[in-house]
Length: 316
Image (cartoon, rainbow, N blue to C red; front, side, top):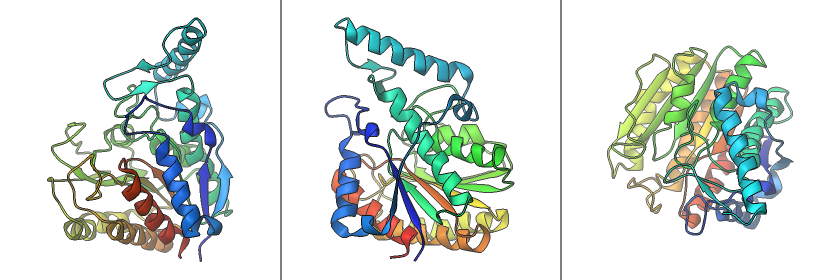
């Protein structure tokens, strides 16, 4: 049985983009309830995330981007104290409240904390059950519910601060991880492989740098087709890269019961993908995996998928 960490912080629940928004605090609640009810949580090492500092955020984001979010947060707090609005819309999908900046730093910080724990041998692998997600946030722009690119920050941290020469990012989500892709494109230390429904949000054209393996698929693609794609497109590149650490941007909105997309994945498909990633990690990375929650918005299938994913990480 592997030693698996579960990184979270209750303050991530305080980030709230408004009634009816799909990226809601309840996502964390149903995940934790499911892991507790199933007994899986008893097998995990729970750890409290710490917020990423500015230096870590700047590994992946521009200084103006970080300063702007901090400034907007301060402005929102002042306006609320004066009786103003309690939310501020950054785009049609992405909204701040007074807790957003702190929660976003915690979400990025959880990924960094997990890297430190895994690389120092305290854990074999880890799952970060935090929010907001990150893979749409570009170097200088919030987008698609995302403020900081959590996995990109952690991957850069592993290379820049811990000296790793080869890491991999596996991005499975119904949406293209355009922000992560923009940040790591051309960095040959970081291989990124992904699948996503296309055409679909964010409708950004895939880049063609040699460290990127983009696999857009049409709506209604099912698990058996994704498994074939993984074997044919991902696995040879992952094996050739020989990553010392693998990151997972774990989005479960490609599940057939998730209202966000139109794909046909099941929790068994996510478990299978996780096992194939784990196989590569054991061969090349001493089992080291850091997984971070991305999408998954219909609550019950999200909870089932995370349980399946974490069960494989923990070897139960």
